[in-house]
Length: 142
Image (cartoon, rainbow, N blue to C red; front, side):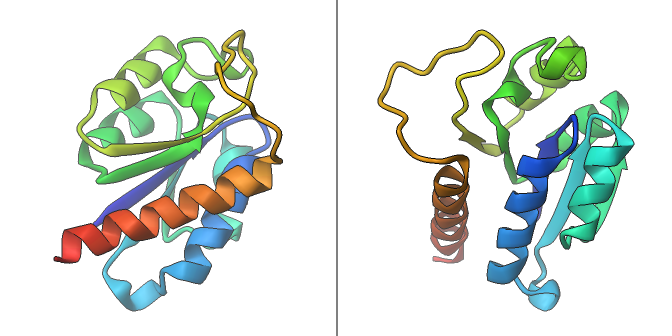
């Protein structure tokens, strides 16, 4: 199973996601955690947090999205030209149209507002996303 974490800019959200995933998923589990950054800083920060592999840029994200079983990241990864333009239209299309289960961290940024009460912190949403990954993995084992 391939779990891809996509982030850009400084990679802080991706780093937190990878760190928490690594605590839940041991290296010898047969599940690969892949860090996909829109830039090398984001990728390197996710690798330092415990990702098994990593790659940077549009082609890496487009190619790996097709192979991923689960993709995690901020909501911006499905919005063309988000992250101050780092997330290209091709990246957004690849992520939004692939068959992977997508678990997105809700952030009211990139001119997208989620029509819901969002009073929790980003870390609370990341923790919940890790719980969703665990539930999804358990469902696949049945």
